Image 1: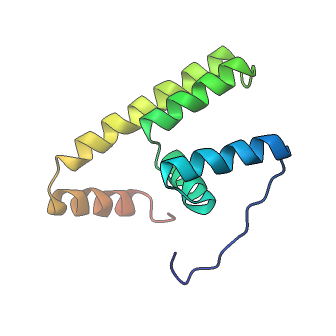
Image 2: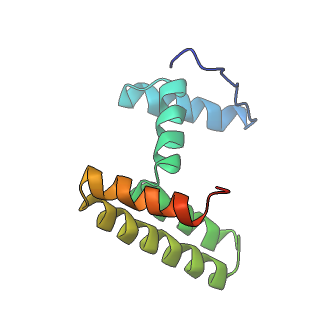
Length: 108
């Protein structure tokens, strides 16, 4: 990690689950810190496998309504489509778009 300010993330679990976690991490050659950083990075980067897992957890735990989960899925899909469209544009085209936005909405 860089020189940016760091935050400590702590949560509690049972001794049995902690022991099982340590054994699994050792078996897979991971540290606790590395494991949790990888999961957090995947979650923040919207890794499809992690998002699928989160969706299953939300369904099992009745977190959010089905409608809200469906809306979130659609928004993620739309975001991916927009990202793909912009990745096809050249750097000058992207700059031109930002210039147009700046002229149209100077308060931004």
